[in-house]
Every structure is written in structure tokens, then in C-alpha cells.
Length: 405
Image: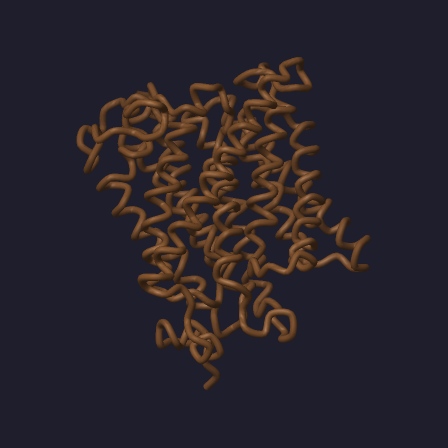
């Protein structure tokens, strides 16, 4: 074991966990004041629910030895049996339980990302059931496909350094289905639904940006040169995404916004995630910059297409994750780790990246639709009109986020 690697991965795990409360604050500022606590609660309680699932069966589904066909891990680590302080199969320098802890934080934030699509209108009971089913049936298998021992996409050679396909494409596709299935919020398109607390959102974006260094650099699983480069390109892509987003909206709508800067930074972070361990600084400028413009365009198109993805999960995580996965196939360079991409003479890598993205999108779309259909029949997904009018803070939790005395 390497004490430096262990120390770094302990820190990185804590940083990735911190991203989920950061996401809660980011999302909380974007909704109306009557839904701030309900929105924050979604992300916060997921930290508990998914932790229990991960111990009981999630880790073995994702990272257990393959059952055959590269689709799912077996029961070797059920209840974390055999996962302790010794070296495990995924790292030669850190304890197996530390790798397990680091990956848990990824499992936590992925379903939390989806909650932005159905903010302000889903029953809390339905949300809990959806989280359990979606994480079990969608996240754990896709995680195994890409990162697990014997997963079929990993065996094919798909590159996903820190979760472009596993996390962002996967959650973005699910978010689209959720937005379409639940329908628009009452008053969407006629009532004012502006963010109620943008300073809260900007702070949340800052927490995400900070935690993302653990997300991407931590995926090196060592305190080494790959982690160092991953950290640097993460910073550059995020900054470029913020700059290009506000330039795009300045041109399109006449003024740059603080929300645009925050959204552009997150778009840049999303896009660089799958490529962080495989590209250099110049490529990260291009990846982050294109993400800023592309994701802004996707958010604008949401209004024209007429679906109510409340907090732009599809436009930022879905579109940004897809661009990042494909960009990895373009810009990956052997000198930074992995293999060469299209721009370095290996067109096959770009094809593989496309196959991985399409597979994750199709699987997530189909399974999410089935889960929602079943839950709607059994529990009902939406709060009733009166509860939605009151706001989820009162109707679902008997609380208010702000009280003037």
C-alpha cells in the first residue's frame, strides 16, 4: 500500500460526497421558494438511501466479478463480504474498502442529478421508490458495463475516466424521460418560475467545482501525474465553459448572467469528466468551450421543444455528457494515458465511444420509462394540484424554507 495514495483517495472521496450537498444547494436556489426544502431533501436523503443499498448489494452488482456477458457483477461482494482493508482488484496501492467508498460517492450523486428534471412536482414517496429502483436497475448495471470486472463496454475499450457515460449520459437520458412522463409544472409557460435565490445557486456551483477535482483527479486512484493532469484540465474546461456560455447568451439575449456563468462551468465540468485522464490542456479548452455553447443551445431549445426539464438536467448533463464522451474519442492521446483518439489516427476509438453512449442512452431511456410506468400505477408520481400550488415544502414535509418574524 501507498500512504500517499491512501491519503489522497480519502480526501477525494470526501470531496465527491461534498458534491451532493453542493448539488442540493445548486438546485435549491433554482426552484421557487416554496420548494427549496423539498428540492434540497431529494439530494440529501439520497446520501443515506444509496449508502445502504451500496453495502447490501450495490457494490457487488457494479464491481463484482462478471456473471457472464459483461452485463452485471455477481454476488461475491454481497453485504461487502471480503471487502476490507486489504488490497482489492481495482488498485494496487489503496485498500479495497477505500475504492468501494470512493465509488459509493459516484453512486450517490447520479440519481441526485435526475431530481432536477422533476423538481417541484413529484411525491416524496414516489421519489424514494424511483431512486431505489433506478439506481438498482440502471446505475449499477451501466457502472458494471464500463468500470466493472468483465463489463462489456470496458472490454470493448470504451474510455470513461470519471463518469461521462456512467453518470452524466445515464442520468441525462433518465431526466428526459422523467420530464416527459410527469408533464409540465402547473403554470409552466404562463406563471413566473424564476430561481428564487441565485446566490445560493452560485455557492452550490462553487461547491460542485471544488468537489469535481476529487471526482476527476480522484479517478486516477493514485496521487500521481495522471491525477495532476486530470485536476488541471478540469479547472481549464470549467473556466472555459463558463466564459463561452455567457458569450453565447450575451450574443443571443443581449446580457450575460450569473446563472449562465454557473451553468457554463458545470457544463464544462460535465464534458471534461470522461476525458480528464486522457487529454491535455489545449484539448480541455476546446472540450469545455464547445460544452458551454452546446449546452446553452440545448437549454434554449428546451423552451422551443416544450418539455419541462425544470433545472436543465438534459441540456447540461445529458448533452454535455454526450459531447464529452464523443470528444474523448476525438482528443484522447496516448501520451496522457489510455489510447489515441480520432485526431491522433485512431478512428476506431471514436466509434467505440459512440457505441457506449448510444447503449447507455437506450438502456436508460427504456428502463426509466418502465420504472415510471409501474410506479405511477402503484403509487402515483405527482402531487395533486393543491399540493403543487402549496409547494412541496409544506405539502410533503410540513416545513417552510424561510420564515419572516
